Length: 370
Image 1 (cartoon, rainbow, N blue to C red):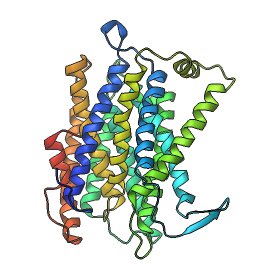
Image 2: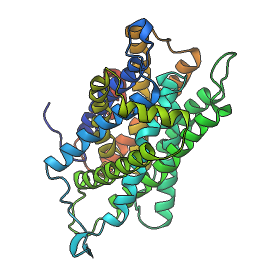
Image 3: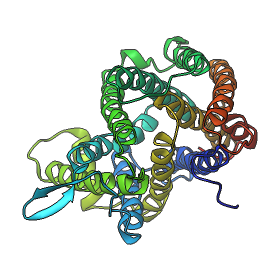
Image 4: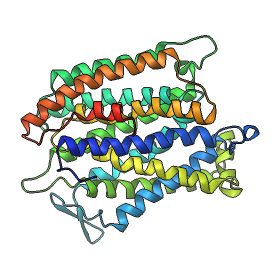
């Protein structure tokens, strides 16, 4: 596929397609590796899969970012630290990396809850859509963002929230009650708090480029991933050698001390989530778009991927098919996609960019990426 121009609708569509594809793989492999050994699946526990997949994801991000030299950020200026001249942006990119280190394991932990991939994605993605709209409101008031948020973008947010509400509030007898589970709420709360700060930082970076300084998304990604990897390594070492005796902590230590026979496969599966990270950041920081729009494109693409992953898991792994409330949620998502497409037409015209089919509908129709 030919590379479309930076900032064009075509380029956005390419990123969404790749994002969708790797997220479908991520959603299916989680259910596969956690499947019962009695049914022919690896039968890993949550902590084993979390450890191995996180290793694979962080390694692929780090190797690409460092190997290709992306860490040489095109900066607004430099600061002097420990005798070195470093990019000024490190002051907030490093905290963003710490937030990423929280997002990575909590995302996997959400998938390990007794809910479908589709429901997990709806809950996580909907919360980030709200965060993205809030970040725009804050940065407009701060004078950092000089673009307006189109009414169509706000309407898309409303329908995205309806999609989230369906899965949070529709509780049937015997189903997993998300809001009554302290573990589930704790995982989601950590995920939301970390993503809120991270999205603010990404948009702060995007909206504060100096005159003549390019928006170096690859440089931002590389420095963020280096920081995230260092944080994950430090926390993993702390947990491994900590004196506490907790059930899940013991499972984490056992995953390292006595690896599961199929640990290499889980590491390989984690590389798909690592690939997702590339496209996720580049969509969130997409040139010329508001945080609301970019967040909607990012999250709605992965929500459609959640449907695809749930169906694929049902067909390939004999897991459960989507429930009626899941399909209702998807209907709200498609309405949000329609409003998002109208907003993209307006934005492309405003920026005088090459016209192309709106990103979200094409992603839904192609159904191949997350």
